[in-house]
Length: 460
Image (cartoon, rainbow, N blue to C red; front, top):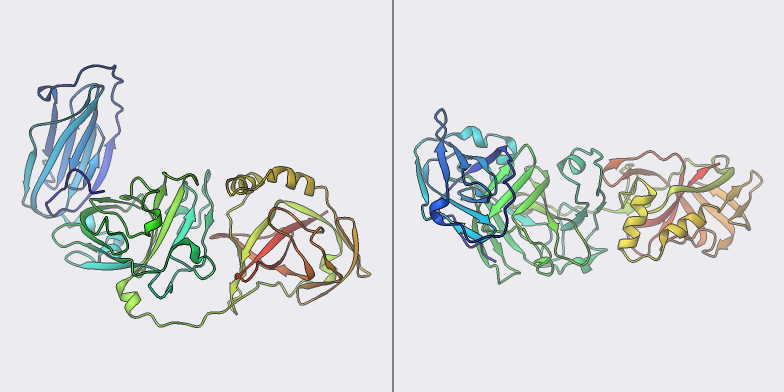
C-alpha cells in the first residue's frame, strides 16, 4: 500500500538520534487543537545541512514526516547531503487522535555535505555519488540462483550484521535456515521478479519494479542508510520480494542489512503478520553487473565424511550430547571446508523451541528418554546400540554394520539412521559460526537433498 504522504523532493540523509525522550502519559480527552502544537525545525548554525527537529508540545507523541522518512522522536537530527527544497511536517498523536500542524516547514538548502555519504557501504549500495546501481533478487525465471544457495534465507529476530557478516554469536532469538532453491523450490515460484535501483543522483532515491506483484507495480521512493547500525529505511517503496509473502510483513521499509559487498546484498525484514511466528526474512540480491557477467560453474557437493576416523577412535561407550541432532549441509566437493549444521542450535532449549514451532510433539521428552541410551563399540568388532547387538567395521570414515540398522538404534525427532552403514561427518560450523565437535557426528543422506540427517554422540 502506498504511504499516505509522499515526499516529492530529491533527498539524501542519515538520521542520528541524539535524544529519545519518552512523552508523558496522557489521559483520555478531546482532540488537541492545531493552535496548541509547538515545534521547531532549525538548521544547525555550523552545518546548514544538519536540521534539528524539536517537539515542544507536552504530553503527546510527535509524528514527524521528513525528507528522509518518518520519526516519533521528541528531538531528532536529520542530515541532508544535497542542495534542494525540502518539506518538514509535524503532527502529534494524543488521546483524542492524530492532529497535523497546518504549517509545513519548507527549507531551501543551498550547500552540499558529502561527508554524510562517504562510507563505503553507500558506494556499494548505490554506486556512489552521482551514480545508480541495479539489484536483482537472486532467482531468475529459469530457477537459477547465481550466487546464493537460494533467494530467501530465514534468521532469528536478534540476528544482524554482527552474526551474519562478522560471525559473532548474539544472544536471544538467533538461528538460521539457509535453504538451497533446488531442494526447496516450494518456497517461491521462480520468475522475473523485476529490479531494484538505488541512486545518489541529487539525493537518495529508490525505484522498485515489482513485476510479480501488480498491486505494487513500480514504486518510487527515498532511502536512508544507517551505516553504523547496518540498517536501511525505505520511504514509499518496498524491497523486491515474492508474492506469497507480501502480506506477512507489516513494515517492508524497515530493513536490517545482513551483508553487503560490491556484488551481493542480504536485506532482512521482520515477518510479524504470520501464524508461523516472528522471524527475519532475508532476501538475497545480486548486482546487475554481477548477473550480466555471471558464467555458470559446475558445482558438485559431497558428504563431508571424516575419513581419518578409525575403529580405534570409535571404541568405547557413547551417549547423545545435549544438542543430540541436526541436519548437516554438504560441502562443495573438494573444498575441504566440512559440513555445516543447518540450524543454529547451541543448547537443547534452542533445539526444542524450534522443533515445537515446526509441529513436533513433545521433543523434550523424546530427548530426555534418549539420554538414557548407550552405544558401545568394542575393539573386537562387536557393538551394542541402544541394547541391540551388532557387528561393525570402519573404513575411510564409514561405519558398516553386519546387520542393517532398523531405525530403532538411533531415532530422535524426524531423524532416524537406517541401512547398512552410517558416515562419520566432519562438521565445522553451526550456520556461519565456527564449530569444533567434542564428540562424533553420524549421519545418512536426507532423501535426495545435499544434506545429512545426523546425530551427535559424546564418549563416556
